[in-house]
Image 1 (cartoon, one colour):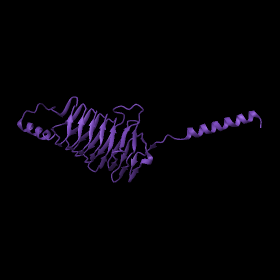
Image 2 (tube, helix red, strand yellow):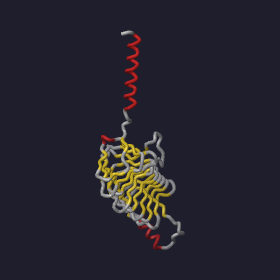
Image 3 (cartoon, helix red, strand yellow):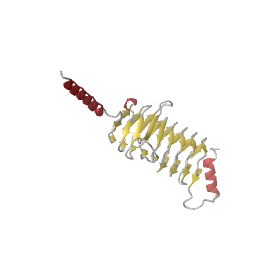
Image 4 (tube, rainbow, N blue to C red):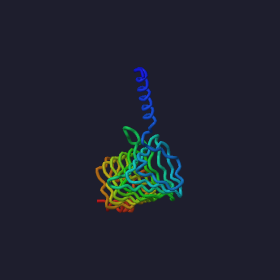
Length: 246
């Protein structure tokens, strides 16, 4: 074989290998928009890329295994109308985060529990860089989780009653925001946010044994948009909400 033919074959092999490497996908998994049956996102599937809104429908359960990383792009969200079970471990937390190379607050919409039939458990999860994580009329249990670098770490509305225990809320604009809701807030650390706990007077939370400190504007803020509340009844009510914290 002539030298020129050998060189040609070597070039062809290099080109073939180059094409093979180009064809290998980045190890991430894109999901369908609707989850209508019981589904598991396992550690083998991680990282999971969410590039559109994902909805867990009623009567369906999404289970996420310990150690899974879920990355959101295109300002997408995970909307739960059914059940979400995300049970991480202390050394293998589940992460809900931005897909951006340089993540920032508001990169993705957030995690949403929507409606009275929405339920779930978040345990040892880290949630970061979202706009607003919402409990809308829902009652999920959230424990041992970390919320950081979100605009609204957790926004409770429309009679929501989540159970929040032993979580860390740090470096968010709002740690816990409650509007016409009754969150159960116990043994959490809520610090270095702009607002620690922001309450509208239509809310009736149960609060106790938390560490709420070093928040920039207010540790606990009560909305007075309808005017100052000077009555003894309201003062006693406010004191009843916060006296167990300190």
